[in-house]
Image 1 (tube, rainbow, N blue to C red):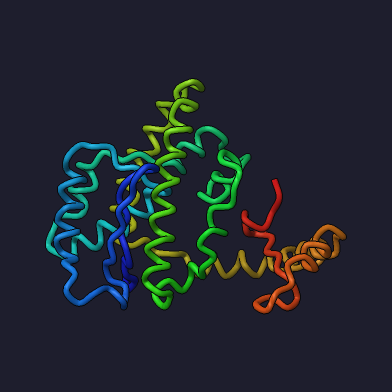
Image 2 (image 1 turned 60 degrees about the horizontal axis):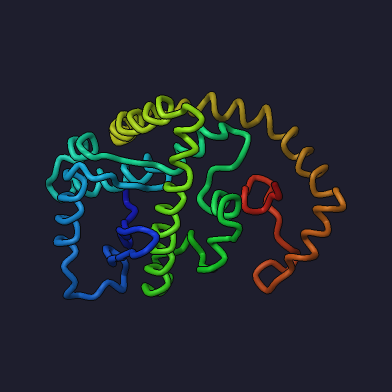
Length: 238
């Protein structure tokens, strides 16, 4: 687990605070350990801590806390988590995309990621100010979306399934930290088996006039041939 937590944002729609953690441009005198200490205090306070895809967030935080001498698993089990992705899952199952950007477009009518317009796969080499802004926007709108979706979960009598997902996240995080053995032979056999069909499907997909038009509309210096990724929710219209 050699990745780093570059920043941590806490707050809500009205006000969000964001702190640099292990970004290369974090000021030398900034007290990162003090931020972690306050985060642990918050997690153990019983207050609702909302995130998007909390299973992912919990794993990162739990591993970091372990490295700093805390009991990450115990803290995760003691925290009171809310999760906008879990809400979206029980509300829509697999019928609608559940990434934060898609939910923003669906409920709020705008493209959240286009505001920051940064390469999220290369945040470590992105200027700190831009990373902090990106992180704070995610936190700001995650809290607002939680408020919008919470009554919908109650009205549709989905509190039980939602809470079950929240409880299961902690156990999955503990298992992931132990490491799951991948059946490499099975993966290789299945990959070989399905590769021709996948390639044929891609060829058929890119032949559609609508896709050809999308490629023309997305030509840029970064994508001179246009951009369209069939497996990306952000590229597909709903």
